[in-house]
Image 1: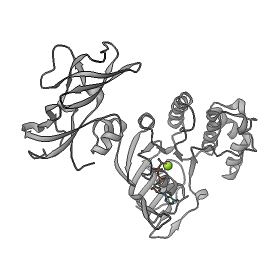
Image 2 (image 1 turned 30 degrees about the vertical axis):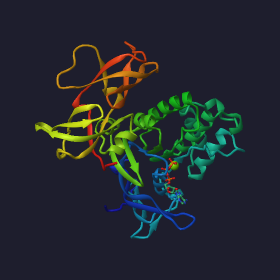
Image 3 (image 1 turned 90 degrees about the vertical axis):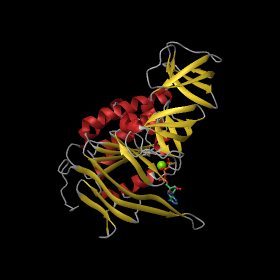
Image 4 (image 1 turned 45 degrees about the horizontal axis):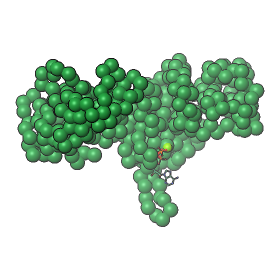
Length: 381
Ligand SMILES: Nc1ncnc2c1ncn2[C@@H]1O[C@H](COP(=O)(O)OP(=O)(O)OP(=O)(O)O)[C@@H](O)[C@H]1O
Ligand SMILES: [Mg+2]
């Protein structure tokens, strides 16, 4: 943890390093809220980490602490190897002295400046000399709006304004870019397009990024690593596919992706990590992926993804769980169909392809692999 003063991009394996960061607020009325609670995080150059979590879990506060817009209570932050905050050493650099750019949900453009002037202002404020015009035009071109250079924000759509904001962030060649829900104000189609362009730009420019969203699809599509936050803490950080397939807790399993949550009691803990559980759907098998088997009689929560529950016609793969039920709701959703199936004492959410579509009232047999059943302790929520 030796601080160095090197400023060149890429000289440090980690572009952003946060150690044991804490930030609390006192609300009006005296109540204390711990918004960021002992967060430690390291982001190498060229990597985008997405902070995902429900409203109020501390995403924006963590981002603002890194940017220098909040004063943390404790911890240490280094950006590109340079210490910008340390509570023990009394170091606290102002935002303009941190090598970060920030992009917000509100575009925060100057209304009296054209697209060009907005970007130019940011470039000059960062002290760039040389060919400023070439730099501004390059940024506007990168985000696909060179033709809007002389337009004012009031004459632009939300998506176009957000492109100006993006150009402004990228024009200063930031080693680190912080995004706080930058796409949540633009419509769905523009959002998809901007998201893809953002990924392409991030790969090309290779800045390290922290991206805040509570849109799980956006998080999975953008992230190199996804950090799931709960009450100010990062409770799991990993590649999106790993978080999705191996959620560390019931909270993560249910926050990322769709989930059937099934209350269960352990009936038998067999060899090889295979566990039998009594549920509202009858007795189900689960294959524990690591960890100790739960004790017989213990309460548990099972999580099964809707796409892992498959309608079956004749043969069921050996060892799979089978549940018989009736389709209560069928919702055609384009590439797939969503079903709610009433079975025994419960209701299962099923997502299936659109080839053989079942109708409401149809009898159906559903099968799912014990390996697709995640078992969490009942108290682990
Ligand atoms: N300036 C402040 N004064 C008092 N409390 C605050 C302040 N800023 C944030 N908080 C509280 O800190 C907690 C975390 O807030 P934060 O804005 O970081 O959440 P968030 O995850 O970004 O939520 P959202 O998804 O709604 O944007 C919340 O309980 C919030 O009420
Ligand atoms: Mg926020």
